[in-house]
Structures are given as structure tokens and as C-alpha cells.
Image 1 (cartoon, each protein chain N blue to C red):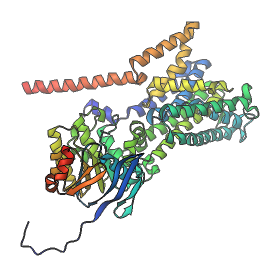
Image 2 (image 1 turned 90 degrees about the vertical axis):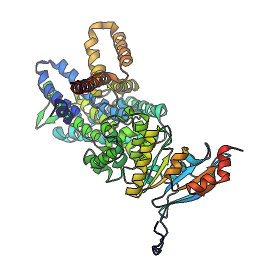
Image 3 (image 1 turned 60 degrees about the vertical axis):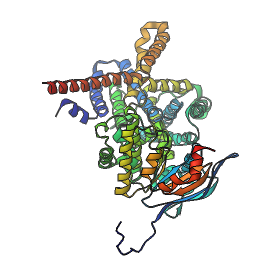
Length: 259
Length: 340
């Protein structure tokens, strides 16, 4: 950084996602118990925490898969609490799931076109418009970007696990989303594939200015990819900070290593 | 350009419809009226099965009521066209066709609503209840449907002032309507809708997260699938010229389900093959006399054991094997070149 430059007038980065006092109780179990955080534009926020600490439930509440018991979620300052997943997706919030979710009987290209086709036009224009919904070029770009070129016409069910993970991520980016929530993108992916996944995510973050929230167990992956990390334990936020701060936080070490 | 790439540019399903239609147009020239009746019947049931293939095969919604929709179309057509027709000889059948399609489309929407809440065999039970209810209406509401006596003397449609009493002319009429309905289905399934229907079948949760409106597509899959049953019914009534409740009973819905499964669910041409198996093969097997059902059941069992994906599944297996062999040949050829 150039320390001699005159300080620029600092405009605070826009908040894309704001979660306020979110709670999700299943009977007596408080899966998410009052979580608040925000995500700034262009940020890659990591969420880590031991198994069962409520990370995925938090995702599902933000994304409308579950109705939160209490609390509010805002996207660009607008309340989106409890909106349906499809509606949220059309507003530019996209996601991947912890377990792989591609459409095995569609080809790689068709999976990608499907991921974008519902974002434009009306039902009727989709019926009478072109077969590819005008998305062939964008799908082709994504196929090239994730190095799936030789597999474009292969049914997704015939891909290796790592390739399916890449496709899964590529689908989340098809419609040029504003915010992408990735649930364990690195789970079960081998080291070579992991490096290429990380590289691709960083490139998309840089080029499209997309904002990410990433749930992940792979510490190296999180610490090198994310700009800021939230640690959850027992449904609550335990700590927030840069990767370096989180690594040095005794409470985090304790939560991970046990008492 | 290699041979493979030329063929991959032509849609195999579209080519099959058009070539098949051309062959069928001329093929039955020598057939007697019984033969014409059998192939006409095959086409009509193929259309009904095509509708169920959309609901069940593509969108994955278990429906056991397709024969009830066929019945709604057939009764509506009988009511509109019989006794001189309510709109005259020329326009009664077109009116009946539109009314049959519309009624069954709306009934499909209504029946689609439970599908938004329940899935799999629970949904099958809901549709089964509907099929039973419709059968009871066909049988018991004598003032409307003629009860167990049904309707007789349902006229053939009139086209350009000429009544299609000639069996060959009527068969060609059925063929034209079937081709048009097949083309419409083909177009829809290759459009983004087709992709969304399949997404609905394979993973609704993921589909919703990609912006797919599950409610719209579920209702559409039910409504359009049912409408194809109703439109088939509009052809069924003038073909058979007599209708009673029996062919629209719950068991008939099961036969249509069998048709879709045996043909290959989720494959465009599956219903045509399945209908040949369900409605033409029994005619061929008549020579076995009393053993007919036994032979038929054994054939169904063996087929589904060999290929759970139905008759099309066998074809697909061969094509896949060929693709793999071609790929291997290519690898061998390039290896040989590198070695040389």
C-alpha cells in the first residue's frame, strides 16, 4: 500500500446482507439463537463452527427454506425475511447446498441454462422463445471458466464428484447473482480440484464483484479465501474477525478443540 | 462434416414423428377396417399416454387418473356431437375438441393443487380418489352420461362438408391431429419448460433455489398432461362411436400408467411404444386364446426386469454402447497415429 498517498474520502462499503437477531427453534432445541451479522459488497465472508452449531440452519433461514422463529433479514436494505427460495433467487440471491445438487439426467450445458432461464422474461416467453433461453453464450463462458469444456454434453450424473462440485458452483453463478451463499463448497473435493475451485471463486469475486458467504470446515480453504470470518458455536456468534484474528482467538480454539 | 455431427444436428424425436407420420399416411392402404381401427386406437391412446408421460415421466408427479381425463373428453365430445351436434355437423367436433381440452386442463389445475402439498404415493392416492369419483359420475349420473348404457351413435367428424365415415379417411384425420399434438408436446419439451419440468422431477428443492417457480410448473404439468387425456378423449368417442363408463374405470388408468412405464417414462417416444405394447399387442396375442393374459403378464415382467427404463431404455442402452465403442475406436485410432 502506498502510505504517502493523500487519504481518499472513505465511503463505507454498501451492506448487501444484514441479519438481525435471527432465531430458529425446533421445539426446545435452539438451532440458531440470536445471530446478527452483515456482509459488505464484494466481501467473502466465512462462517465456521463445529458440526451442529447451526450454520446450515442459519443458511436455510436466510434463504427461505425455513421460516425463522424470530429476527429479520435484509438484502440491500429491503426486508426479505421468509420470502420463498425461488423469489429470493430471482432477486439475485443464489446458493449451493451442502450435499451435491446437480440434475443428473440433464447435460452440463442444460444444467447451466436451467440455472439462468427463470431469471428473464415471462412463462410464455420461455415457452415460445429459443430453446436455450438465449443463454448458450453465457453457459459456454461458465463452462470454459470452470474448465468443464470437454464435458459440456455429458449428463451431470456421469461426472466425477469434484467435477459435479464445480458444476454446482457454476450453476450458482449463472444468473449473475448479487449474493452467493456456498454451503461447504470444498467438502469431499480433492486437493487439485480444491485449488482450482478456490481460484475460480476468487476470480468471480474479483470480476463480477459478487459477494459470497461461505460455510466451510476446511480451515486452510476458509482462511485463504475469506476476507472476514464468523465463528459460530451452539447457535450463537462466538467471534468475528479477519482470518488472522480468528486463528489467534482463544475462545475459538477452545470451541474447536473442546474443553 | 462427419456423419455423427450431421445426425446430431437433426432432432431424432422430430424426425421420428415426421417420418413415422409419412409412413402411417400410406401404410394402411391395404388394411381392412379392423386394422385401421386398431392403429387409430393406438394413436389415440398414445396421445393420452403422452399427456401422462409429461405429468409422470417428465415432471415426476404420480398421477393415477389419466383414464378419467380421457373419459371427461370422450363424454364431453359425445354430449356435444351426438344427435346432430349442438353446433351443426361441421363445427360440433371442433367445439367438442376445444371444450374437452379446456375442461380437462381446468380439472388438471384443480387436481394439481394437492400435488403442491403431497408427493409420491400420497399424491397417487389423491389422484386415485379423483379417478374413482369420475367413474362414479360416469356410471351413476344417468341424466348426463347415460349411465351404464352410455352413448351410442357418436358421429364421426365432418371435414370440409364431408363426413369422415370412411375408416381410412378417419384414420388419416386421427393421424393429423395426433401429429399436431405430438409436435406441440415436442416443442414444449425442448423449450425451457421441458428443462424446468425435469428439474421438478429430479430435485425440486434445488430447482426452487435456481428460481424455478415450483407452483406454476407443477400445475402446468398436471393441467397440460390432463388436457392431452381430454383431447385424446375427443378422438376416442368418434373412433369407438359408442362409450360407456368401463373404459374410463380406475383399472384403465392403471393400464395407461403401465403404458408410460413400459414405453419408457421421460422419453418423448416412450408413449407410442408403450401404447403399442398395451393396446396393439393384446390384439396380436389373440391367437393364444385363454393363455393371453398369462403370456402378456410374463412379457411385461421380463421387459421390466431387462430394462426398467422400458422399451426405449433398451434402445438407449444400445446407443450408449455404440457411443462408447465409437469413443474407444477414436482413442485407438489416435493411439495408433501417435505410435506410427
